[in-house]
Length: 71
Image (cartoon, rainbow, N blue to C red; front, side, top):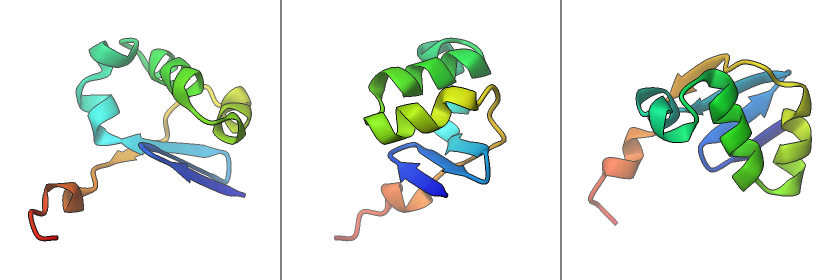
């Protein structure tokens, strides 16, 4: 099962987050666990439930398309 919401993607039991969570981890709990708790607090119920067994971030990626000024 894959779940993709905002800055998080969960597939095959592995969590990938937006690089923003890694670059500015101090703003989101300061540790991987803190980032995961932040995600749980702000996520929709489906993602919150899926994060229950996740204890680490497996990877990160930045969606550079967010910087594209074209409409």
